[in-house]
Amino acid sequence: TNLKRDLYIGVADTMIMFKSKAFTLLFLLSSSSAFTFRHDKAVTASSSAAFALNRAKSQTISPLRHSIAKTYLCMVPPTKEEEEAEAARVNAELQHGERQSALIIQNKGGGHGELGFQLAQHLLSHHSSKIKSVTILQDDACDPAKEPFKSYITDLPEDKVTVVECNLSFEMSQYQLQAMLGGREASFDYVWDNNSKGVEGGSSKAILECAKAWNCKLFTYVSSAGIYKPTEETTFPMAEDTTPIKESAGQAQFEEYAAEIGLPLVSFRPQYIYGPKSNKWDYIDWYFDRLCRDQVLPIPGDGSQKVSLTNSQDVASLLASVLNNEEAAIQTRIFNCGTDDLVSYNEVAALCMEVAGVKEGKIQHYDASLGKAKFPFRLTDFFVSPDRAKEALGWDGPKNKLKDDLEWYFELYKERGGLEREIDFSADDEVLK
Image (cartoon, rainbow, N blue to C red; front, side, top):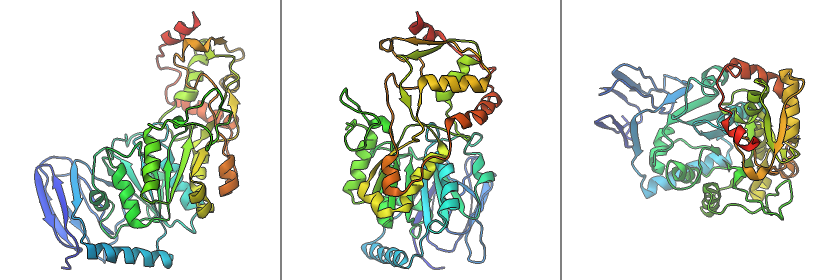
């Protein structure tokens, strides 16, 4: 065998070391849970107690889902000579345009939970000249029985998309993460981080250090417009350069560190997101929960406050628009992320009433000083504009409108048991007294 690297895999109470680029290894697990590990072209695994790892040039296996569960991996740090050789190889590939790969780091779910799925689809369908393959590094805390995760296998092309599951909350080193992604030869041109919420803890710093080592062309970070801290002097939509931010926010510190180590950073700050494969439905469900039960809709203030509700497909196209003009993306760095099809709180209520067939909804405005209760949005205006992305990146705007999307949204609401579930309206009663 050709000795190329040292990889350590710890499984349950067993530690195994193997030194081989081409290897076959069979061992017994001390628990019933198994994992699969992506190592270049070939991985086979079973859920039984015994399984084999086999790599051979004649065998090409590209399973869509690679799961790393209850394992500990690390790659021995390279020598200085190996680092220099790897840097030379990566630079040569970049110069000859050989690398055309994307890495998407995807969180376990929530408001941003659908973005990795939509982004992978968009990159392969709209940017195939630059992106030939996509790897999704998926937090294994996700629920694989729910969307969008259950659609990874059915809706993403197996020959172009690889999914690697691991515990992204685990504080790992650069070399452990590199091992999970396929060893020292694994590298990516473009990275989209839709998981990190700060620099310290978890996999965040390892991701940044790997991206730096890969000499990636773009590192695109999915931050949040929630880091904005508007004042009485703030004008809306909130501008990227003039709106104060929470300096202590983890996202702000992440942006600062990524820029400090010299990554080609681009950061997007999205707001409220909905989509057909979402796993967070709170924003619009709040309206249907009340309208479909003949309950009052307590809306703070006069309801004229504007909100940016953006379809996840449009968010994905915005995140991918960095590929339209990479130089401008890096120079500009910070972009607001949302639709310019703004609606007021009252307008969302009217649109939901129309779709649900409610002729006269019970809207009651209340003094915002009483608090939010369970209202899903801010008490005041809190919205952004995508104008900077349109101008600098040539983004051609959203393809979806809330008015049209509410048709399928309401059908999904009913399929999810929205009409039958029990709702606690006691918080509403407090602000309506």
